[in-house]
Length: 109
Image (cartoon, rainbow, N blue to C red; front, side, top):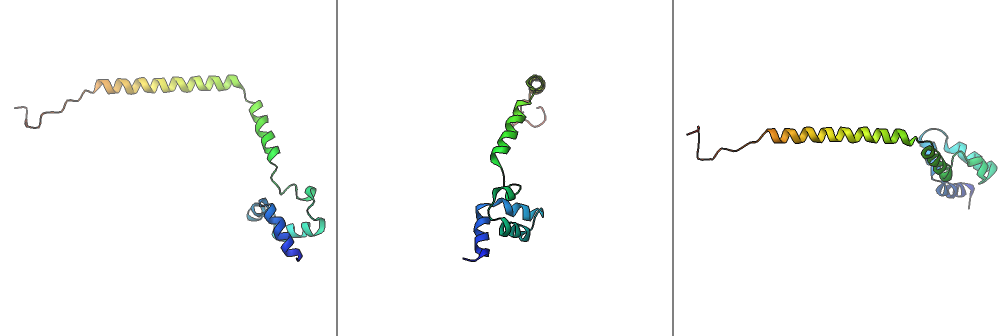
């Protein structure tokens, strides 16, 4: 198997590389040269691979930094707004009582 085929197999294992090429962050030539020089070394390609555990850690840290008092206050404000809207709609429905005229009457006969 030639080097080109081996590189293709390596890229298939790491589909994130295609995103970097599409975004013009890297070229296939640059990635091939790195692979040719260093092989499949994790340290060389770490910036091109998606780190799922790092992303999960960032999400957890974001959740830890949420101020629950602000969330509670905002939810209360949203609840008040919804109740106000419901009251408005309810009052509007009761004020317009429409009674259809019988079909056989034309002009208030």
